[in-house]
Length: 169
Image (cartoon, rainbow, N blue to C red):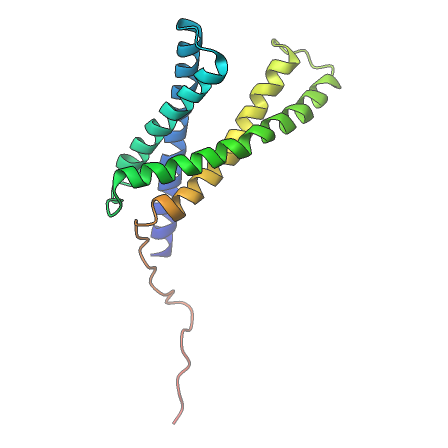
């Protein structure tokens, strides 16, 4: 049963991660559409795309990753999900800058010839690494707060281990 619990949570984690990939695509797509097609300044475009991506991720997670999460009303869960995502964004922002400096310094000291400018490679690697780090924050924070109404089955005791001592008469 322990392996069933671990497997169930692992499946939830991978579903959550896959939803995050769709959210990333939505975020980049909406940001570029709003910025390039409609001329909205980048700061506003990324704010709009972030909100739409969070809503996308919330809906997919509520109905696919955690379909058994129904004891909380959707607006309350959306607010919790949005707050956790916002904290993730606040953590991610300085993390990207820090990682970008490290990666760019490494790239500048190598003789490796890349098809793109070093700053483009470093920015994208920094973003990818920070997204991976924040994935864990988002998953565990949401699991413990937003979706804490989803029960985890209690594992049965391991029959190979002694559980009680036999009292001698």
